[in-house]
Length: 102
Image 1 (cartoon, rainbow, N blue to C red):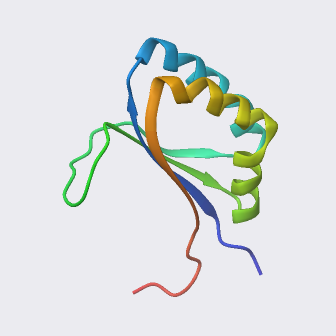
Image 2: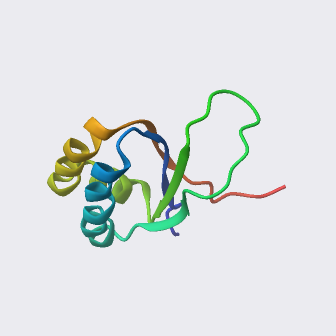
């Protein structure tokens, strides 16, 4: 039996795009190590309900434990320190659904 995939769902407002680039370049290291796959990385969007931010990101991981391990890793903790002064955002780590579909 396979475990359902897991996702990071991020919504970000970047206040200093030039400085934020250091985070974008460096995040490739932990994302590769933990097998993350970008499903959404910016792109056009239309807010319909609730609050919104200027940038949306969805990363896919093989399972929930791996998604948590990536976020809690020393490699990613270093990146949070790089990213935080230049952006404000929301991040949810969520287990996917592997059950019956409508």
